[in-house]
Length: 82
Image (tube, rainbow, N blue to C red; front, side, top):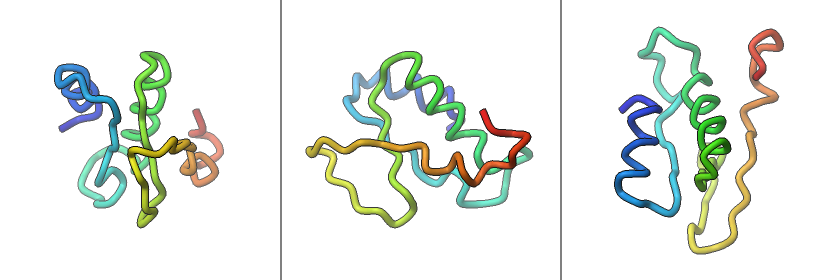
């Protein structure tokens, strides 16, 4: 699914928490590795949706008050930073 489709599915399912997976994992797309998560984080913030973005291999308990961070931002090329 594309990021916009994933966000729509999240809303359609009336989910409480969204955890995007496999973004930036494989170099299969024509866009930069960070574009999907930047888009999702922006849209989730605009729409006040709970987005959980653990670092790769980080363990998360969804029942806990997990605080997401945009950990990928320091990795973005300077001229591409949102």
